[in-house]
Length: 265
Image 1 (tube, rainbow, N blue to C red):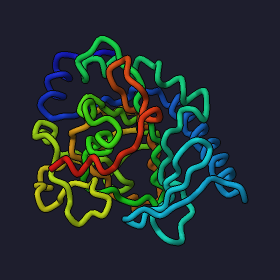
Image 2: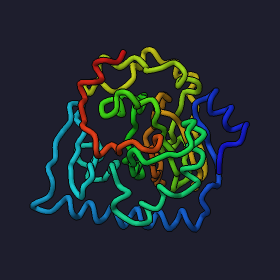
Image 3: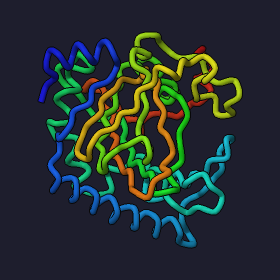
Image 4: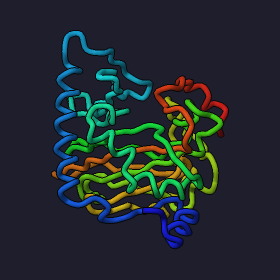
């Protein structure tokens, strides 16, 4: 499961690695079923009279805290679809077991250049047919920096696609080599202060990662990436696990201090 010499060279050069067919079709279907079971339970819990608090962020996005997770609802005013939940692996043993799955953990030893890795955070990302919204250019680095300013650059993410990912249903789009340029300039028009400045990005160089269900995409915190909207009639569900060197606290054990990003470009 470790990276081959060719994969490692490509990862260092381009800032990402895509592996196809990592999870078998039967496993992927089991995970899809578990995703839908968990999402239905989370939504039911969030709609109770005594459900957790909800708020609207500066950019208009809706978030609610329930089931010991943060639920981001789809951005459209009329939508009640879940966009993502973070964290999520505590919600089902099948998800929690993924942290020990060597198909995730082993390549991260090479990606991070360490002998042992540990969980940082996790997301369950849903782009429902015709509703799944886009997410603009960004790096994960500023989000991690708000929690872990000294180690944010030492965190990487793996995305397991539970459906075929195409340009039509919301594929991840990466900017090869951007990870080597450090923190990107942030968008002065973004009220959250976390998004990258699109006027300073050569989007002509972007690459849409179109892969089959069961494929894995790994990239570091400094990789510039975005995702397009789902304009198709097909699902695009994905599991995101973020790893860090062993011995460090999970994100849930750290304090969110968003003002820290003002220290960045």
